[in-house]
Structures are given as C-alpha cells and as structure tokens.
Length: 349
View 1: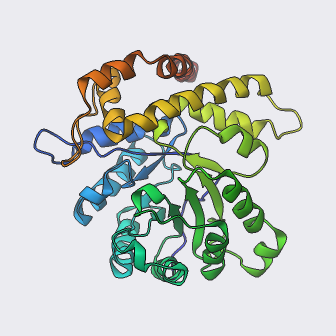
View 2: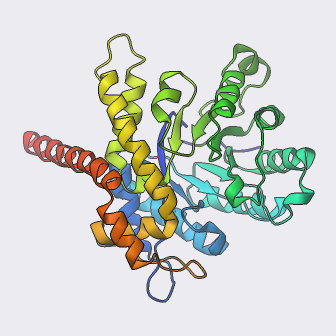
C-alpha cells in the first residue's frame, strides 16, 4: 500500500529542472541545487528528471542523486513545503516501478511517468492503461500521467483513455499535457472534478487529488480563468520563474470575489509569456541552457548526443524581442522579491 506523502499536491506551477553537467559530462550537483532553490524561492516548484532534465540520458543512480540533493537543498533553504515531482518512466513497467520506489526513498513527493516510445506501435489502449495502473498501484508515492507525444514515439493519449486510467488506480494524481490540446485538458478536468468522480473514484491519498496541468505557458490564463487547469509544468519556468508564478497566481486570483489582480494585466502577461514560450520551444533544451549560461553564468551543454546550441542561433535568441520583453517583467519582479526579503529581514531586527 503506497505511503502518504507529507506534502500536499496543490494547484500551482512547476519547472522541469535541467540537469547540468561539467566538462566531462558528469552531473554538476551544486549548480543543479542552486538553480532548483532559486526557482522554488520564486514559487516555482521543481520537476526533476523530466524531459528538460535529459532523464533519458541519466542512470537510475544519477536520478536518485539529483532527487536527494534537491530535497536537501530545499530543506536547508527553508523551503520544506516545496514539492518535488520526479520522472520515473523508463522502458518497462518493472523498471518504472523500481525507479518510483527509489525516487520515493530519495525524497520525491510524486512521480511523473511517461510511456516508452521504443515499442510505440505495440502499445495499444489496453497496454497503456495497464502500464500506468500497474506502476501506480506499486508506487509508494502518487503517480502523474505524462502525455508528451514528441518524447514517446508519437503516443498521444486521448481524454477518454486518460480518464479511464484515472479511474483504474486511485494512486493516479493527475496528468501533464505536453500535447497542447486545450479541448483534451477541458474534458479531463470536467470529468475528474465532478462530484460523481470524487464519489466513485476517490484518491487513495487525500493530499494528492487529481490535477490537470498544462505543459506550456502559452494558454495558462484562459484555462485557469475558465477553471479548467490547475497550473502547468513549463520549461519556460527555468527562465522566467517570477513572471510565470505571477501569471498563474494572478490568473487564479481573478476567480476570487475581490481579486487583487486585474484582467488587463494578466492578459498582458499572458501575451508576453506566449511569445517567449514560442521562442524557447524552438530553442529546445540546448537553447535554454545556452540562455541560462549567458544570463545567469551557468547552464553549460547537454549530454551527448545532444549538441551544443549554435552560437549564431544563440545570438539571435539573446536579441529576440519576445525573449527580452518578458525578461523585463521577470527582472522587475525578481528585484521586488529581493527588496521585500531585505525589508522583511530588516524589520525582523
């Protein structure tokens, strides 16, 4: 029987953390931890060993090393409530179960599992459902379904299948949709938040309800405002953690009777986020690392065979108006956060 996580799964925003490497392609744990903590301080929780984290190129030992280091770093920074979602999907059901157990022991609160695309042609609806149900039933932590056709050999699960998977195991705690299908997101949310679903298919862990999360930043406002998304896991969160947290929590605030945020401001932020997201989707993992290297002083390259980001493309990315306009918002909010922290410390004395 899966054990209860000590941290609740609540709507919010997460960033899939890159795995940083040194010149010998060994994992750079200190840089990884520092980046993870910096994002969590901006209310951007970490997803470790996901697609952005080059999990396919990591050993199980490296994955658990990163999870342990992240938990230790977050706790030491006073971020004990920051939840860790860890990628545990590998080729086989047996392997995914084993990795989920290792991730739980290392300090992960939740697992996110992608189906293997190696035998995509042999994985029909029945096989996919059984895969997720078997992994979830054996996992000591709740499991999130990861639908990303681009990283799963083209496997694109529809809303009916994902809802069926959710009904198949009470230890399934949500889905991340990196397919960009808003209609799918809407249908899944409607089904899994209904009174009938909650009555007939209660979650095993009451602290881990079923959440529907987007995989991009470009449609957060309309889906959150419509009550159809519980947040997102976004690669863009590595670059703009403060701005995207502002977009999510400000959008959610608009649903209150007396919102502090304005629709006009959230609409402006959404427009800027959508433009920046499009630029970084094209840049990919290597481009994101290049940008971090140039603007933050760390990032480095990917583990081969992913090649370094070309310098000519990097120069264009740094000059891209879409990137820089949203960065103006990020820098302003980051400065405000630092100022509040300093003032708070001063007032404490």
